Length: 216
Length: 216
Image 1 (spheres, rainbow over the protein chains, first blue to last red):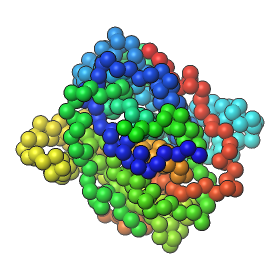
Image 2 (cartoon, each protein chain N blue to C red):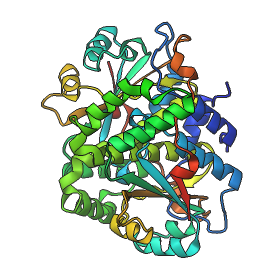
Image 3 (cartoon, chains in turn brown, purple):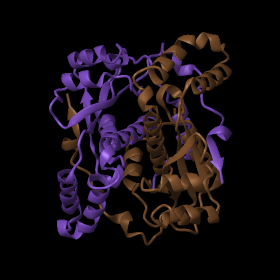
Image 4 (spheres, each protein chain N blue to C red):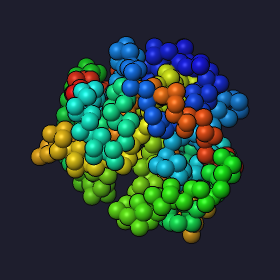
């Protein structure tokens, strides 16, 4: 196994910060970007259902339009790849069956053999206690994927700046998502910090470990 | 910089899976665990506000009680460290001021110099559009931290199994959180997979990249 050392893990997570200013001249190498896209694909989710999509924006015109509905934050234009995280707005039996068909295909089993698993998921997300909050359930999964992406980028030395303050309805309009089952939840420009970004060297503000972590 | 290679990143994320059976004889070395706790502390959050706490359970009696309210999933008992992710149930001006005091302390600036930042946060989370959903806002941040933790553990070769299906009210009762501002949202046992966990070798089920990622 080729795992990373705990030192590298902590160093890279300390190195990460919410980049305020990207160097617009620097782009992420395609091979490196392919690995980061794979980290998105590999992100875990509830039951493995992946109620998400990821839009990767590199077109300058489209970036400019999205910047205008992202509080004009320059990172949207200056980054290398702007990732928009979409959540599924509805989630029903058809979505579960689509997933089970994929599972049967990947694992070489019959869909019928997955009946019990299907029952759990339908009982929870479609007919059960979480049916009423299934849209928020999908958003939570998207945030989990964002967490994976923020770590993955940090590990390979790519800068990011998660943007919650996007105008979701405007994003949907610009990206052609209106009338679809998908909505933009959060965005994350990725690229390389500008040498002049003074935020890069500010000490990270975290509560003391003893205030955040309790051991029992 | 000592970043990880894209190959290692992808290999470790592929190596990760939702561990069904931990080896109860294997514990995470204290130095390695310290790095993983630091990954929790370093997790990004909205405005940096960290509306979370992390409870790390290693006491066998407590693990057994929590297992009983986690659908009896054996991972809760057999893991090395069981992490319970707590979200803050309310979030107001006092929480924002507590954070700004910490920021002033860490960065050696006056709280007064952070007035504009304070205004943004209060305007958004206390008096603004997100005030009505501030509890869910906190939960989303917790899911982001869970995503960071799942990647961090995978990078250093530690196994996990995120558990959404916990009885939150029962967790709160057992952990003494009733009547506090904190509630258990999700849990994640961490440790080492048992050699007999047949799930470890099952192919990972993900939609095709072209179904999940759209490039513009």
